[in-house]
Image (cartoon, rainbow, N blue to C red):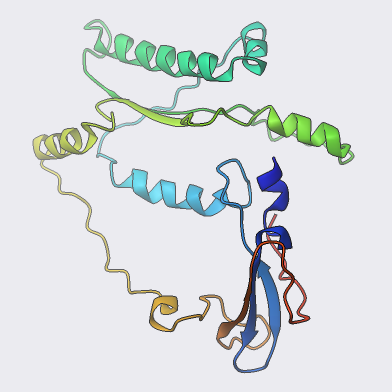
Length: 229
């Protein structure tokens, strides 16, 4: 929790960027890169979708949801790693066993499982911001044990054999691997210390004019940049 609390604050250091055209400047603090931080994992989530798209085949896919009974879910407060691990295994074995049944599908399938520890009902629920302690307590309920993977692959999509299986299936279906467009090198690699985002005032290039370490304060008196929640 301490990493998330310090995320994008002066406690982690950062840099000051200035516009080479109009002189506008602002402070940008470093991120914590914690896997549970909602501010840091947004880009990772966006990158995950194109990566999974590379494995897609011209076949029908299904979305299944496995939910723990409330009585069993309470146990997760004390033994998250053991209970969530068994949920992954039981749900994957259920899908693959039923699919392999000749009376049903009679085939070997692939499964990508994603663990969710929160509800997804998008109902109208206006309410007051919680007390700090209670907010942190509820948030920590969803923090996973160290080294525990939230996303796992089974069957034809198991990580060790996924590429070979997908290539074999594409060959049997006579489909080619999707081609990818050539992505040009980002400007930041060509011009050192230049940010990709333009100046919010005039659109000019923003360049790093100062870097400060953890716990230090910038010499420049620039206002902090507005961070996305």
